[in-house]
Image 1 (spheres, rainbow, N blue to C red):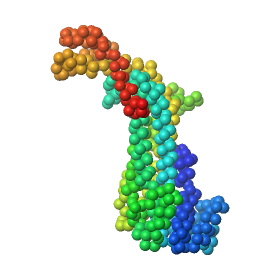
Image 2 (image 1 turned 45 degrees about the horizontal axis):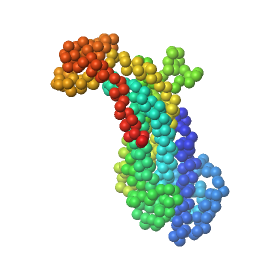
Image 3 (image 1 turned 135 degrees about the vertical axis):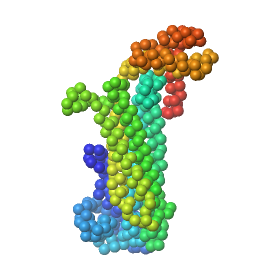
Image 4 (image 1 turned 90 degrees about the vertical axis):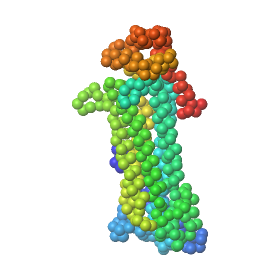
Length: 437
């Protein structure tokens, strides 16, 4: 992933030094368990941990140079460790296979990445809750098909996003649990050359769960589910970003991204204030979603193992988590500093001459004894006059002047149907459902 869309804490998980550090811990913990089982000398595990305690620098170029010859990354790493630890290092990797190291390491990295993403979601949820409460009763227009529908509040829009990201968090918690498994089961996953207790020991030390049954690899349906979950979260990021982009359009301008002093919107047009952050989030969401499909295609491996999944995961593991981490942090910043314009929201509510109240009149007519078909026709024929006038005419006044409507509803009854606050009578109920009492 390019530095422009990366944050240091997440990037660090995927650095070679971090990977090799995890590899060492897997090997050392396994050797420790093997020593407890009497398979290797206790001095072997002690030699590994004593060397590690000195805080050695992991020499990535040296390991890479060995790999040029061996054409095998795990062997290159084991060779480098042996060169530094000495004779006792020969007891490393007893009964293990490369996948034990690679898959368990990936589980550790994805679990760590998940913890960062969960913290990101908590920060976003906090920002959404704060702004939702701030605008709990700020009137705005709800739209379907991009067309004005009925009044809502801006707080409800944000509360809906909060509920969506709360579901995202629950999905990620489950995905983290599912991905955090350890396999130290040897060739073909049969434990023929290594006791299952070694796997249990390594899993406990690394905060993982032993894989109930592996082949020579951890089953890739787990990874498919994980990356699909990241894709869903990215889609929720895009949904909220798209809403903000629409609200920032000049003709709407009910909310917009914060525009800092000295910021420039266009190299040609000095007046521009563009929704660049949310447009960026839309693009990043597409990238994260794009990683879900190759993860699903990784599920079908040949027999007990092939490595067709390996190259894919070397890309998507870092890129998907780093990109989503950046996107969630950016979205949190957008929400936290979002400029909201209640006066413009009210102006847009009033723009179409009261059309947003048409359903209440329709319902009132049906309750007064008019058939639904006739009631719809009576309201629509007046509403279309207002529509064609671009809001210059008033639906309320046209209804009062319509003899067929006036024969059923009094002026006072018609006026009552244009009360804006009526639409907000259950906002407290919705907020209690979303945020609790």
